Structure formats: C-alpha cells, structure tokens
Length: 135
Ligand code: MN
Image 1 (cartoon, protein in one colour):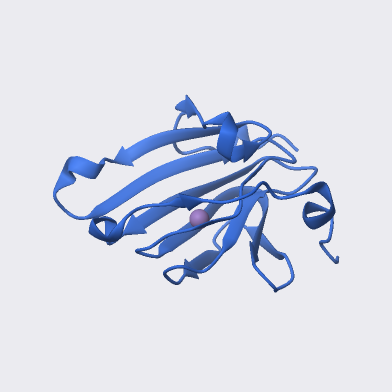
Image 2: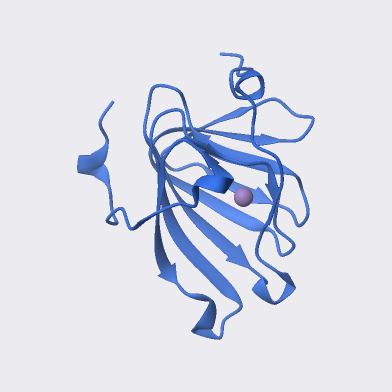
C-alpha cells in the first residue's frame, strides 16, 4: 500500500539505525529549543519497520495520520493503529511503535515534559515479538 500521496509532511532525516529495525524518516516540527518543554516530530516508517523498546520520562502522545501501524506496551498484546488513532503513553512505560508488515505508517510523535528527559532506548524488538500480532 502506497500512502505517500496522503502524507502531510516531507520525509525528513533517516532515523538512527541503532534504534530502529528497518528504515524510518523523522521530520522535526517543534524543536527542543522552543522553550515549551515539548518536542514534536513526524515519523514515517517503511513497511516492517519499528523502533526499539524504549521509555519516555515525560510521557508521549502518538497521532496516526497515514497507513497501518503497530503499538505495544510490555506485557500487553500489539495494538493496531490506523489514521486518526491517538495513543497516550504514560511516563516510563516500556513500549515500541512502527509500521505493520505490509503498510507504510506515519505518526506524529509529541513528547511533552522534555525537562524530564525525552527517550531512553532499550533492546530491539525481535521478529518473534513483532510477528505476535493477533489479527
Ligand atoms: Mn515512544
């Protein structure tokens, strides 16, 4: 499924390979020096791409805008994300997010409370974990 015609923001920069499995693109929208203690970026994941397990000390909000994606909190089943879905992630909850296997996926990532820290990266999501989605 090609969703590029539905994209709002351009692709931006390639996400750091050490924290992602597959290829993702990050477009910064609100920078750390805004003075608002809030960082916002648009992230485009190629099909099958996901970030590592991680936490946000200040919490995070994801807003899905295109394609079909996955979100999982440690110890819970994978949740399917589609355009218009909003995920509120409490501080320090271990989780990951990314595209489903057959679709590109785009979300806005809003990181509030950046004075508390932004992200702490953990281990990669294994293929077994990624493929555990129950349709
Ligand atoms: Mn996150």
